[in-house]
Image (cartoon, rainbow, N blue to C red; front, side, top):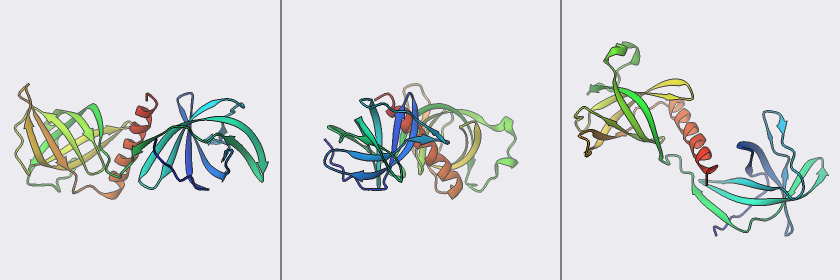
Length: 214
């Protein structure tokens, strides 16, 4: 079992009926962990004594998942929920550039040695189909039909939470698969901070959805 040093004010997320509710640690004793009442967008989740809950605990670059029982409530300036200490804890890497597998459609155009190409200058009909295989804050892998050359720059259009986001990546690793298509590992060296944060936020969203199935 992973060892966790629980600390006051650290963030928690409670999974209830496929939804995550925000909370934080208010107090720690030998008998229980006291947390703020879990809430999401102003909505508080009712949890009865004896309920078993799934908990995510954030600590620096790591994310921990465990199960706990609701053992009571108390009031100290704010309502507080008392949960049991976990018997088993699962550690999940949460590095900034953690890579998440994902199969999704995308489109791209090979801009060769012009990484500063603006999406508005591209005719939509010039884009070709691609399959996104995985994604991180620092890179991605896509599968394409064209023979991409090392160091070529690809302008890739991804759909993230219904928003179309153009990303320029440099081809670093290229492998031909059994179907005759090419798997390209792209490095996102020209990504602006705002777009990178959108990608990282989306990756955490995918991780949380995948953890529901664990």
